[in-house]
Amino acid sequence: MSLENAQEPLAGDLRKIYDIHSDNNGIVAVILETRHPVAASNSHSTGLQCLTAVLRRVNSHVMLGPEGLANTQHFRSAEAENPIIRFSWLMFGRDPSKMEMRYKDWMSTKRELVKRGLKVSDTFEALCTSSMMNQSYWSQDEMRLLEPKICLETWQVINETTEEIASASLVTLDRDTSPDATLQQTVDSSFGIIRREGKRTLHRPAKPSIIRVLYSPGSGPRLSFRELRGFNLPIWRETKDRQNPFDTRDRARYVILAVVRMRCAPQDDDFVRFYAAHGPEIVPEYEDIPCVDTDWSVEDENQNRYMLFYGPPGHGTSLNDPSAFPEIARPLVKDDVESRAIHSLFNKGMKPYIEKAMASRAAAVAPQASEAGETPEPGEVHEGSQRQTAPASPRSSRQEQRETRLPGRMVSSNRRSRHSSDGQGSSRPAKKPRLNPNSNPNFMPVGPSRMPRRDENRD
Image (cartoon, rainbow, N blue to C red; front, top):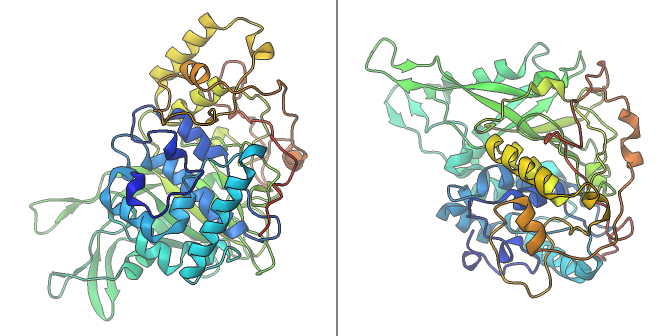
């Protein structure tokens, strides 16, 4: 995304350092997926934090690279209208020397939201479904669930507002009203001939980059997390047959990318969790912020509703059975730029590159290097360094962006102790994830915190 098209680029924007349109964006993807916003301690802003983190996950999934959506004019224009989009491109992190810059970026975002009638303390649901988000983001062609609707009485395309497009693109799985409904059934029921304002209208599926599902578990038996991992989106292809104008046999797979547990009361918090396209949870770089609290499951018997985000898995990501991974992963303690980059490549379905990177690493790195060498935190660069393309390989990243820090390993966080048995939720036995931090690229490394537990910004 070109910064010249955005209003007042924020000081910590990672696009000042990396070219997000290049082919090599593994490090950028890791930064977006594992560094979540650290807000002012008294701002009660888990809603904004969750939405920002969700947009960062969307950024890593569909915005990067030469063909990424960040290259499109309409998404560049959307950033000028939506300060949360701009906020989602920040470097974040816990570097104490960048605290003042983070605080200024936070206050700038807060002022822009106030201008649009929103607050940093608003709930995730209020922000995510706001007119600002609907008009600038969820109504974009790449985010709409349905092709333009057609009135079957006049055979004319129905003109809809951006609010109507965004609303129609939100799938509602409500097991309060339909206790037996499944995710797949609910998605399928979104298409076909549907009566609208007394007239029959044709709802044809598009193929959006992201699909949102508003999930209400209801008071009956909960759907398991495995049943929410993904669905098959119908693909309608026009035919020349008047009796059967559409061939609906093809399907496109969508997999879960993010889950937000939405608060029940204004004084509560919103929580978010993320998943790689091939199944495992993406463990954040730091977990001592409220929005990534791990003490919950979609299978919990409570009154919460959830917003689920799905996307196409990408090429080559069906290498594992996603059900082999638990809903909540154990914390992983290895801090290694190369391993993070390898994970990112795997997440994007680039297995040949992974194998090449791992072979190169095994041949070049001495056995003691991972213990004794100095390694930078992913994405960190020296002050005053020039804008650069994310390195083509994990090793070049280390050579070009070395930043001295104390060696050491991060101990496992107590925040994940509830699920120490690797359970797949609140009510099912565990399947142990196939994770080997020495050789398996499936694992998600975690970097150590670089400052005290709380970023002491002032709101």
